[in-house]
Length: 172
Image 1 (cartoon, rainbow, N blue to C red):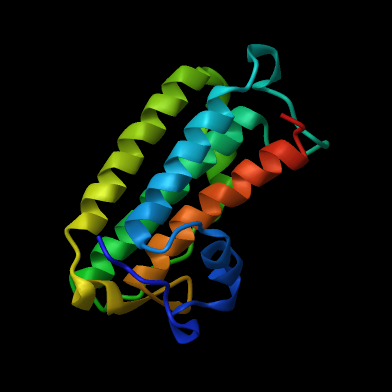
Image 2 (cartoon, rainbow, N blue to C red; image 1 turned 45 degrees about the vertical axis):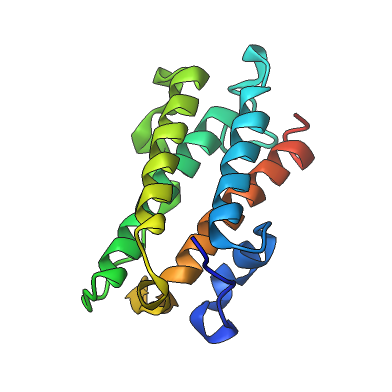
């Protein structure tokens, strides 16, 4: 998969930090690096810290991992729709509403990590099937226009953003 970084006009301002945070010269490399970082970081969380919050009202470690899984699914769905030239504007999603509805505390970290591997495997397979024309296609989600390529890079950067927060704020 050779997806170079997107041009600035392909990336809404909200996603630029995620795209910039992604590591790699190629989209496949960036996605793989992000998955490995998530598995390593969240896999190392001690059992007595999975329900830790770094501040009142913030998500637990387990909720953050579930959020990563949900977000990757949403991003992949958007990429699929746009790559297939579906011009229907897609709604945004409220991750703050998703997290409590998902009831992460019912799930073990092992289950959530296995889910991440599965979700990420599907994301990689999806993006490997895109050619350069597919990656350049644009669509609208949450009122913002974004390219398929930018969604891929944002997926990788979003995961790394949360890995960084796990270390910096959760002190894990």
